Image (cartoon, rainbow, N blue to C red; front, side):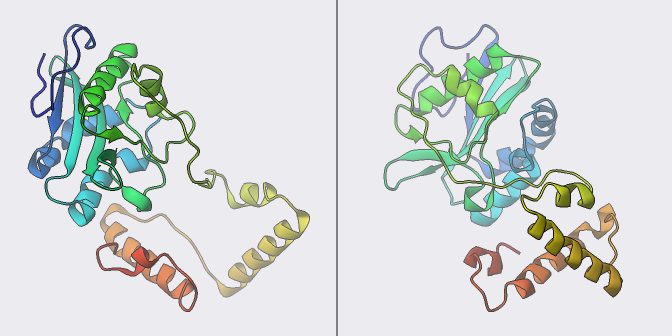
Length: 242
């Protein structure tokens, strides 16, 4: 068993045979995890884009504070089978919170679905070792998240609290989305807006990979223009967000 950089090793008997846990606090080491992280991400059905390595590392480089990175990793042999992307905060109490902050819809951990309970138990053991000196506060966890499986295996004190409401837009054709609106008046209003877009000649098309950067920048600019003169999340207007 290995547990470098932990306040103390996991309690005896908490790690499944053949499993180790480690704590990564260095940004360079985080970046180097990309291939392993992507493999794990692909084996975790509950994962959202907010648990991808690209999103988390980009967020950390824009918003992270030196010395605060805390990545809890669990391995079976050399294979990464679970990960909790966290950072430490000091106020109002010492705590470990998910990377991604307020601009991520969901916080969660990653679990290899093929490894089952052993991955869950190993990650819970690693988190418990950190919980000796800080509260583990997993925020914005959606129903069915991987974190729920770790919570089920948590041996210490634990509490569940309601968090913010996050609306989801199903991946449906526009007609299907309109049909799901709750009232006839709302459906009529949206259909009128869609007819107006058709009359203006507005078209949509998939964005190719080499166009993605420019497309996202244009999307953010349109977002800024749409909300000009109205209340908008201040973070969306800051250079580090763009």
